[in-house]
Length: 411
Image 1 (cartoon, rainbow, N blue to C red):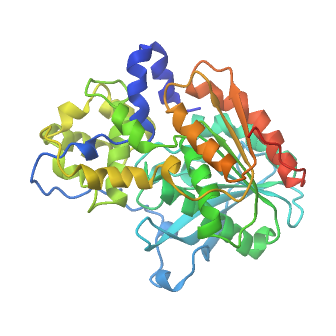
Image 2: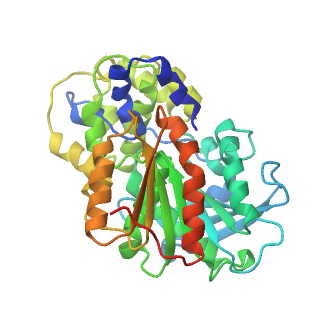
């Protein structure tokens, strides 16, 4: 899984818990103390015009295909063809956006064979960090998922890898990710060349990718009611950003850059409600500018041993309600909707990076609503290895759902 989490192994357990915010929580939004009006910083536009939004974007419906093109073969997926699909989606304010997903089709693909939308973790802020780019950069995190995805391809399934942070790379905006996932599935099914109009659809993801997966499953009944999902496998997913924000202390932390990146990402999606840039001091603004177009490694380097106290212009607590409301809107534990599809949920019992009570509460509420939820705690020492130890169980569970076997439940 992500290399940044390896940093935590040498950090005391009582300090590691403070990295909760690195997966999406933002303490900055609760600490407003200046009247400055610094503007949000957005990523540089992708230099490839394919990623740009067409002038008539608003005339399209969510999931409409805007463009598609073939990509070179990938060594990590031998024999498979690769297609980049641009489609219309919707941001957190209801406005149209252009998003992308990369579809890997196995050799000998049969029409309407199953489709897996796999939400890779994207702890980044720059457009160059998109999965559709990183697939061709030799990114080790993506390479680490290749064996599991090849097992899916070997079964004859296609795999979609959405860029679920959106065109502004709004890291931390979990609900947005769910909408992009669903619209990506719509687009794949609508593109005739991919021969998937009637494909059974499964979702999967771990950590930040698990968060986007869980949101997609929960939003589907209201956002994409025409889609039928066979099942969703959700691993190590942060279910409550408000709790994660509250857990972030003021002491320096080696991975503080990820927490700041989430603050920047949420500001991009909610500039009027969470204007983080207006509350940063000179040092904070410099760090923000340095990581605004960076991928995970650079973000960690820039923010290493930083802290909220060191980057804020002050510490007065004002206007808490609006900041908290953004976090609540992106916290699945607090969302009233429930999935209409079976769910497989797994995590490490020793995971200190995410609030496990939020997972328990969410799964319990879904179970009470009649959702078949199969749960698994793996014997992993921390967050990272939990992904690997649960992946085979998740794949076998999804295979059963795609084949129409009744879903087991731990409820």
